[in-house]
Image (cartoon, rainbow, N blue to C red):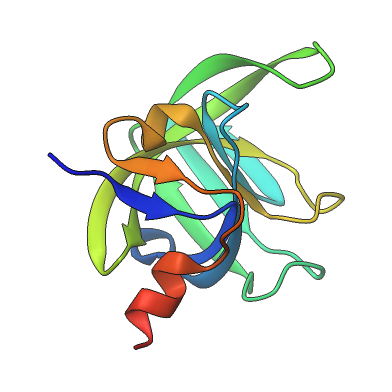
Length: 141
């Protein structure tokens, strides 16, 4: 299987989350992928997540209820461990839909609302740090 080349950043969509044309950072230093959310409420064995941001483009107010979710430990670049909720969803790269695991985090203070980590990238993509928006430009040709 040949791997597609992507850049260090791109603009992609998460159709099941109602999020389209979202700026993402491709981060080979991160194992898991992470997505910004503004509120998480766990009750009655469900997880209600609000995807909203006043700073990140195309992050209007979307609420999704997940019946399936888990928790995982994530170590940040500064070595701090955090226990986060993890959901399964779908993401579109180069017009193709892929399954993706996403940890939920508040990322309003970060430049990108989404990080795409190695767990998702492996066996699918090679990263060329000189490039940006390769998948987005492919989609809009």
